[in-house]
Amino acid sequence: MSATILGVSDTVNDPAYTAAFEHTAKVFEETIKIFDDATNPSRDGWKLKSEHKEDKCYNKRFPLGKVYHLKKEYQAPVDLVFQDHWSDVENTVNWNPSTDYLKRLAVIGNQADVLQYALSDVAVIKGKDFIVCRMYRKTTDGYIVVASSFDTDLPPVPKKTRATANVVAGKFTGLGPQLSTIDFLASVELNDKLIPENLLSKNIADIVIKDARAAHKHISSKFSH
Image (cartoon, rainbow, N blue to C red; front, side, top):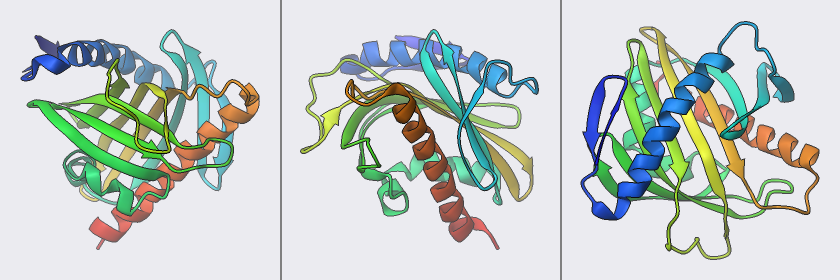
């Protein structure tokens, strides 16, 4: 099975992940449209859910689910920021306090892999585990990375419970030799029916902000001169 996205084709190399690859390719196309909507100056329908200093996280409901968006600047070249995210992803546990566990399970294409990761306990959100198929494409001024959960018999990390990532994505844009932005998108189903929706939304937005700020600290330490 192959998928052509943004003019670039990739083929899954492991039959066990064909359905995951196909599903994420479809989510990728939908995510491109959500990025366009999120970055429209009108911000029509987007609601502010949480903020910390200059960082603001908004959400809006789409057919894919309730999507959270945050944009942040990073003082580093976009190619280095992307490569750190894609190639060195397993190192995330060493700099992001929200991530308890992260392992690349398989590389299933030239621009696709499979990850398993688990969140630390954050406020009311306790011990969630995800397995996602992840893809990227180069754009004219950066990269887009999209990950989405798929059906699997693989068990969750011990002491964690399985949750669903409708989409977790990043749009990496180069603004100059030492300046980049990342637009973060996240839509997750945490299966916490006992937590009031407003409280859950606030906590998800808080995690998005914390992740973006942790990435800023990490990138500043690694790449800034």
